[in-house]
Image (cartoon, rainbow, N blue to C red; front, side, top):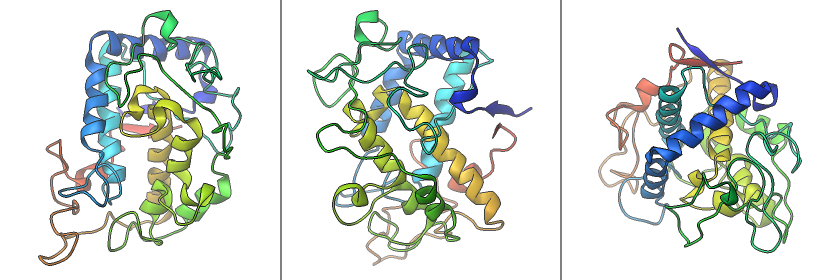
Length: 288
């Protein structure tokens, strides 16, 4: 029977506590840091050599769908009642709204060093030491709103701009495409400032701190953010019935994207699964 992922803003106090407790236990067991290492390892950009799977590629959505499932399974081994909630950043848009409450993810980082000092993931609580990252810092950091050059979270209309595109993705299947749902949602844009960070990418930028770069998994909000991103794929599929993951077949030899992206029926590293197999997860979970 499919379980349900819910809006973080609708969770009861008991549900919040169970989610936090399970996440802290996965961290205590050492499993959580493996998720950080995996995300760092699969963070190449367009300009690098080799296969791109997690970002700047059509497989951005199925890769993170499977990544979320792995974390969710780890949580449910601790507490079978727990699922990953989602953060609706088109509605909960302030630095004090859900999920930035003391009983869920804690709040913003302090001005001096951006260290998070409130909530269950604050370093001083002793349960959330950063061990895998791009800096030597041991504590979780945030800069909600990007204080030095303030930006806003994406709006409902900006998300709708992505959802209404009926093509899943288009050639050349990278960060430069201006058509297709995948990149409009992933958010690689042109220009400067907020225009160059759309939807998913702008949320990472807005949270700041640990959420910038390959080690963004160190901030638990990563999962709530990506659950909401996954929900958008779920909604897009239902709006555009029959639309499928693209490309259906691999780019031909001689194409600049040959052997650099994953086609619909190719395996999606690091798992033995294809995007095709991840398009329908209705038997595993649904969204409330």
